[in-house]
Image 1 (cartoon, one colour):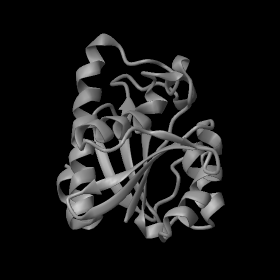
Image 2: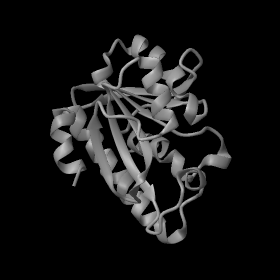
Image 3: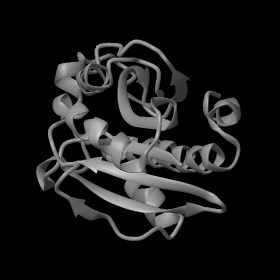
Image 4: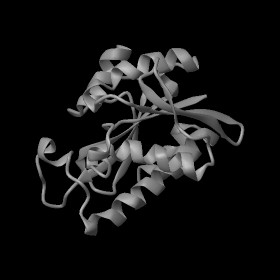
Length: 187
């Protein structure tokens, strides 16, 4: 089983913001793969959809807390789904990568992402997978000024392509493992 966690902030005012692209990827994956609707799980402080892609079991987890506290939803999810940290994939925005670029990595530092730092503190390790989705503009903007901005009309297509590519990577991870998925996702 693999557990995918989409970082983002809950609430309508955060829909469509760069910080929420991780959540948007998992919402798109749930629809694309015909998984059950997300349901609230109070113990995890998250919305959860469980299902299968082929023979591979998976859970999609959307923490219902602010990004910088995401770690408090992760540890209970690992216990509930009985997985190790190497079976967790955190899907999140990355302000150091240009919009539309993607990268799958394992065991890396947080890069200053407060949500990832929260996950590392909760798990007491950095040995988990991260699907990083670039949200930076061509003309660099400071991360704290960028993450709560919504995508402009001329950026929406790039964001949608990154979301589709991320869904394909989720499918590849479930069928063949994250090492295999890296080949296509990191290009």
